[in-house]
Image (cartoon, rainbow, N blue to C red):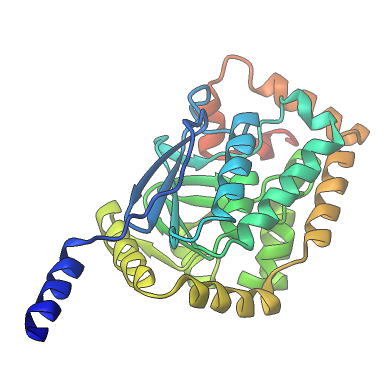
Length: 296
């Protein structure tokens, strides 16, 4: 009799599948899909051909992160983009909210909260990630990219500003102080291959299929393990390497103050003149060259 009971229990166990879900609304700037304990989040700004970080991006991400903070079923979150040639260009500098101190504090808090999520966070990049796009990426646990179109950078200094969303806080821990100085102060891009060589990203791939094959295997492996163990492992690493909320907020505060610097405003005017009759895509494809034209 006992053997039949155990057989029945074993059969029931094979028929019952754990249900992994997170209750998410329909976002304007994000697309989401879930496969088991793995959530994929796709950046999608329908009003920008270069996937600018706008108010929808920030509000949607803030809502998503608040839900992930109390969700114990999702173990891995993969972030990508559906905009060709761009992961995320940078912050939309035309936003009227940029003049409001609250916007900057919310931005910095969001980037910090992303870095502290108990889920494993992965960036899958197939295009340009600069400014806020790169700052978001370096707050993630790991980053992977294809070699063809992927470029990374912090172009703020060339625009009369400086990184204000944690980029200067996270980058030195990834690539060292000297290299962080080189790329932040020059506003130059780095390719996926070079970024992988110095630790900016984890690995660069020749094709999208290779990249996602690698990420999927990693995500599957992470999904085997208890979320409490994954979260605990992250905390021990973050204690040694991640900036505090206060440090990120201070950067954000200074960035938003810098917008009112006369030189920064003069550069912004030259940039507006340069962008006349030129598409945003053409200007952004080689942004370091575009920045150089502001000074020559």
